[in-house]
Length: 310
Image (cartoon, rainbow, N blue to C red; front, top):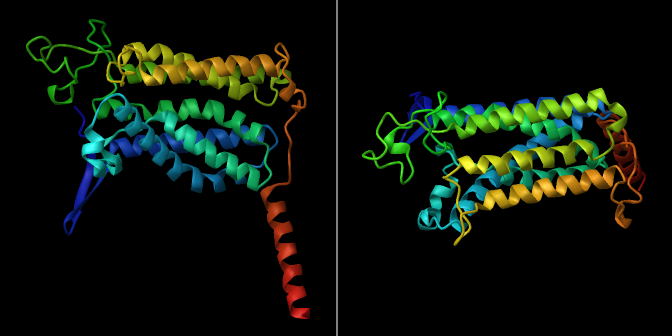
């Protein structure tokens, strides 16, 4: 197996390590940001806003992903993080949940868009395929960490999991010896995400007139939700709702998919609701960041001149 630590060194009593997990997660984030920037420009927006927003989005998104992971485990009945609260901050060991990154990152994105008077639909539609690809790029980290695998399988692409990384009951080496192979659940999601992102990008380029504000985002909700709903059948590690065999994540995924379907029906006027009557048919393209910065500088200069006169 691949060592999760690429290299490490000591500084006093502290050990700093570069892990494959961090490398793949950051690679996924950068890949997603690059694709988002391309999509923003394709729709007529200014991608400079995006690169500035990443300064806020990335750390808050990682924090959200960690907190969702911890909350998901705790609500599922795992007391580990309540008994070891400092481990909540131990992100390098793994344990990020994509949904938490989306919720926290989305909140920051809404704030940033409002602050700079940006079209939130343009940003959400640009992020949609990028989020799928970014998550897929990060998935090999799960293989290195020996996590996010499924049930035992005899399929030729089954993977080996070391006993120290197995969850019950698969850690019973008498019933599940070293030769046991498991579903590579992370790989299933990686493949699904690439196909889903490719479908969104192909469709909107093949039928540009159907690219209305909110279309790509709605398609992402449907495809990401359906994909994760199906994937949960291969995720015995996911915390279940107490008293049921349904995972919390599966419920969230179903809600996502349903919300996406409703949004698509509203967007194409199949379903008519009062609050959507004023939705625009084209993106609102405001001033570029350079133009906005120039306008701010002029206002600042005027204020300084007024102060000097006083």
